[in-house]
Length: 604
Image 1 (tube, rainbow, N blue to C red):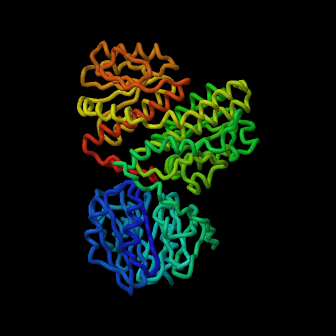
Image 2: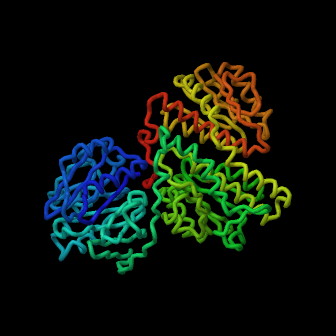
């Protein structure tokens, strides 16, 4: 959440900053702003709402000479979405932008106010610029003042600061929130909180580590680590492919990403399956030696993929598996033993709570693995091993193809372990691998299916709530279906195990309760059908998703006949994604950027 951009050079600084912020819109935001320092003078603009409002404010502003500039898209954490609370924040002669949360800002703010400093905003970020300027009055130079400032901060941050004192530099610091720098053969310098704004501008990028700070000018990149030792930048090549970030004619990025799932799952499988085994070159052959238990830790959609994985690991690999919500795991003083493989799952690799649990596992000397979509992300750099999902850029805030590729990875990993543990026969593994090859076709969106869902969606715009119900792996899918609907439609929805309905929730059953029932042919069909019949008998409105017709359903979405419940899982996944999409579109919502949400949650 929140996005940062920065630029040092002689091109149109305003355009570069605004274009960079546009590339970060997918992260979610409620206000935006830029500050440019050129020829000793600042120009600063802020706006609430979409970037078009900031563009309108800056339309008369031009930068044709050398300048340093910073920009930010804000998602409110401290203080409401207002222009005063929007970044960049101003001091007497400096501006700052910041992602993350300064945990001790209340104490710092009180001290600064006692010194007579007046605050304009309600944010934690503003303390940074005032503290810097206070330190600047007592030190020899801006770097020393900035170093003192960073030392006083507690919490997570990615910071860019510009000051008239040294008007050709951008000062930076990184701890717990992503930040990188890009360069090109024109000697320009670009900052951003993810790769996307740099594509097309930079040839090489350096990813800052936690604790890094320093400054950058047109001719210098000066980096210090957390121990105040100077270090060299390590640049790697930046991709030049922006095609996947375009809508390609779809109404929304989310719709495009649902349709892309067939292609990206093929990429996920590529080079990882042979006729009779799953191959993960990322994993050393001894990686699972001594492992007696797997602990999966994640948030949101990734948590649902982890729940799905727990069924597969125990069913196929016969390995004891537990699943943890990262924000809960962090604070309950968990018992961690070194025979446990600690697996974190995150689309971005920057999810704050999940990242902190990974650090806990490392400190406890557990072996760690990350399932992630973003190479060089914080989790990838920290974990012992990484399996990349290869989902490509996902701009829709409500995750679709990230979930699909995560579950695909877990299915493969369960078979990889089954072969290692001799818990499935060679014939069974070959059969499962053949099923894996069928996933791309099972998630391919048929026009008739989408049209059916589009027509049905108009009947589900009211009522007092939704229950998505399923058994076994279809329970996590029910949770995911409910999450997708509530994220983008703002309608109340819950995922529930089918067998649990009669233990309380069935009291809600009436025509205004919409039940989305997942009824796979090849997994507990009769038991699930019986649970749905109980709801139907109490007059709940039932929409059944199944390859088999169900006469007690008010609405029926028929999926194709498949050989295995996991292929049914993947097609039903597409159905619940499309149903949420079409309901939300009918309600007139911004599907890609739902209210109050952000793509990459880098604060707890």
